[in-house]
Length: 222
Image 1 (cartoon, rainbow, N blue to C red):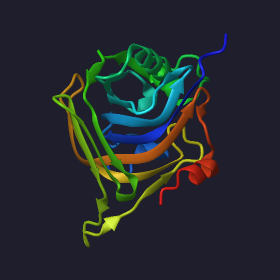
Image 2 (tube, rainbow, N blue to C red; image 1 turned 45 degrees about the vertical axis):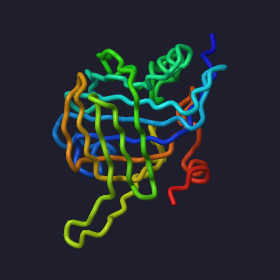
Image 3 (cartoon, rainbow, N blue to C red; image 1 turned 135 degrees about the horizontal axis):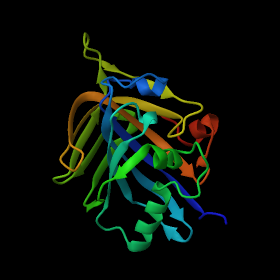
Image 4 (cartoon, rainbow, N blue to C red; image 1 turned 30 degrees about the horizontal axis):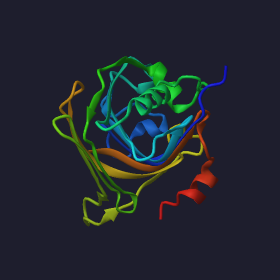
């Protein structure tokens, strides 16, 4: 039986406990041996069957005791307080990796995340400016993050670093930033000047919707 027809295009941000640049992106072990942080995206254009997902903010905190491919992960979803029941059903269907082929983003997370903590429904402030490598997520009493441009430690000038992943499963291309993130929810952490990435994303039932060339055409970083 075919799965639901869905699509998400929007703006993505991530924070993790690794050093700037995140060795995990290059298949190396995480800087501190474990991985914790937060991810979030604002859906600019999206649907699941007949349910519109436009404008929704989706955030989650996470913790993995080792590199994420070893699994045993924890995740706490954080969704807009204003989300409707049909939207909630659609988002959890997508996040759960249901009916999605092996190797796609949410299907992978459905395997490596062992424990889903009680979802939080709250007012979410999501600010994002990829050209300035700047972003911010605010969830009162739950999560506070910000991203800023990486600066040269000698000259204090902005340093630009782009991650390009032709075979990526989350995104193909992202701007790196310096991240600061504090979680007061179930999965607590306090990160300062660690890795952050900003990217345009486009996902569907079969994973990333576009290859690197088409993604660059549709979502140029500059």
